[in-house]
Length: 246
Ligand SMILES: Nc1ncnc2c1ncn2[C@@H]1O[C@H](COP(=O)(O)OP(=O)(O)O)[C@@H](O)[C@H]1O
Ligand SMILES: [Mg+2]
Image 1 (spheres, rainbow, N blue to C red):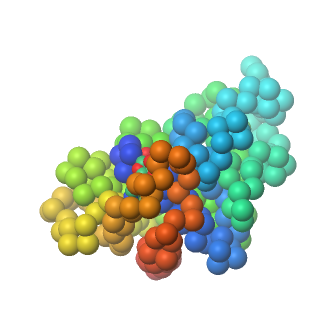
Image 2: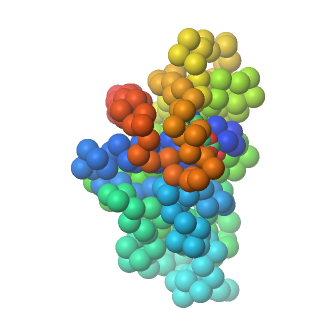
């Protein structure tokens, strides 16, 4: 399956992307995580040092010039070698930094987008491989270009009104584009939290509490892997995937 993870900033999108990927990889699934945000956060959440995190594809001017050209650009650039060339292996996971794909489907004629679009189109036909796209925060960038390549979306929110309102807006927008398969995951949520009545939210599928071991390690490491609460996170991942497969 090809999934996207969306939500307000800071709610846990990147962490959940890694937890899902890590769970699937341990089930012997082939997994590629895509950072479609502008920051380095997915690499950091995987425990990589900043200097080990590749530059985003959309900033790789040389590669873009080589594949897409300038002026009269190639609309079907060669991309089949790029996943191997640009992705990094972290344990059993593959990960690639793409940069924001906001305009990838908007008909924008700029060359970085042409390359991202071609690469995504190439990746989605690899049926066996799971792809989980860690999206940029918020609603503004969410468009056809962002979600046309995925068949499911995980909307993440904290148990706050603002987070949930953003979640609902994201969800409605994605549905308008035709992405019906969605779940809501509440992060940092007490077990007894009940959802306020907000229209448009996807079905609530899992809750993740504040994770003491993650909070405790923040000063030394930004990795979200190998936590003491892994079994609990595996259960969340299994629930989310089962709900999306329905
Ligand atoms: N359930 C949780 N318990 C404790 N800390 C968390 C939890 N979820 C996320 N975090 C921490 O909160 C910060 C923001 O999470 P992140 O996944 O980067 O959010 P986003 O990608 O939505 O901006 C990170 O430092 C992460 O380690
Ligand atoms: Mg993030």
